[in-house]
Amino acid sequence: MKFFLDTADIDAIAELNALGMVDGVTTNPSIIKKSGRDILEVTKEICDLVEGPVSAEVTATDADEMIAEGRKLVQIADNIAVKVPLTWDGLKACKVLTDEGNMVNVTLCFSTNQALLAAKAGATFISPFIGRLDDINLDGMDLIQDIRQVYDNYGFETQILAASVRTVNHASQCALVGADVMTAPPSVVKSMVNHVLTDKGLAAFLADIKDAGIKIL
Image (cartoon, rainbow, N blue to C red; front, side, top):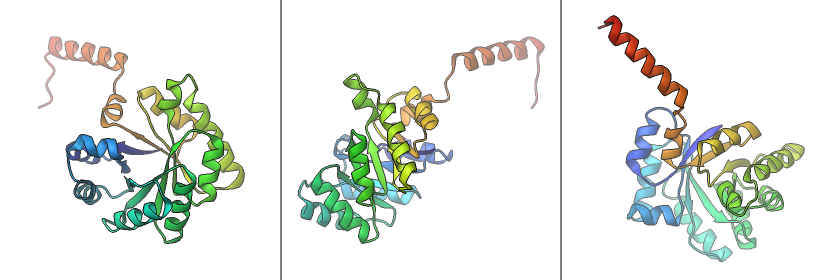
């Protein structure tokens, strides 16, 4: 499973990228706002840092305007994926931009039917929002699993990009049900290393090292 970082924090991206943990980056208007930077400027910096796809979201809701914005965004770098909402206008924009040879990430997916439409429109990525489904007492992982089955049934090449990943359990469950990609905040990715038994075992080893006076260097 590929790891995308859901952030515009350059330092956080650079830290995890150096460890080989970054296969791409996703942004949205809320993330750009939090960064306090110009969308074109910070997106360009991310694209220069990361080899994989960098999702940059349009701000328009009309198809023609989305297409125009998408065409401007892809000029930033070759690894831009234009992010459009899962509406009829978004699907129209997806079809045009995809036909022009661009990567498109269709976002705000909450049903298998929506994911099927996005695949038919040629989306590179479909972004089901796990956490937001969990918020309304639906299991977001069920949606990932259902989309996986539908895409596999018909050979769709659209990649399932699990979004709204909030916990380390979300991360492991995404991998188990076959998501192609997960996008998560850097804090979630870094927390995946944590386990109470690892901490307990290391503490015991360190105590024995101290008692035995073991030194390697």
